[in-house]
Image (cartoon, rainbow, N blue to C red; front, side):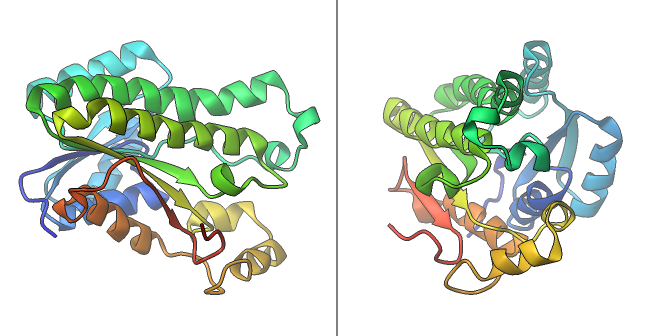
Length: 250
């Protein structure tokens, strides 16, 4: 499952799942560019990933930042083979547990700006590079509530549902350029951020909600991402792959 010579971008790649995805891409031969708004986090993450990793500042909600980022990518790397839209608005309990009628416009827009609009802005600029090279893979990190719904976290689910729709449009509009697009709908993944966000009882409940009776491991997700990005999925596009231990089965 070689990605030798490929150039991959992972937005929000300095920690948690994003960092693990970047590491796995690098392990399989790709040169990886990770992004963050905070320059201090980039070097630390690159030290963890090792050789063939680069950190570039990027704020996905600011057009100027995206333009500067794309200009540098074009100059320094000349192409983009894989884009993983992983950057997302941080989990906030006060938003997560609000019912729809209590969510403010600002709360909804803040999440949409990062998860959906940010991913859209980066994707449309990367698509221009991929169209010229006539190849590429774009993978959006979504979640199962975007498919099944949930009793909490409506703004997050709405944003992730938008990513699923965006992946379908990219697949249909750019397949002629040999560009593939996917969404990965994730269940509960055992990251440090999740453990900080949930109580012990909430974590126990999360473990028991799926068929495998455990949380997913970041490395499991990362390996799936690498497989999707490789030629193993060369005749598949537009799909939403559910990776949640069997909680949502369709």
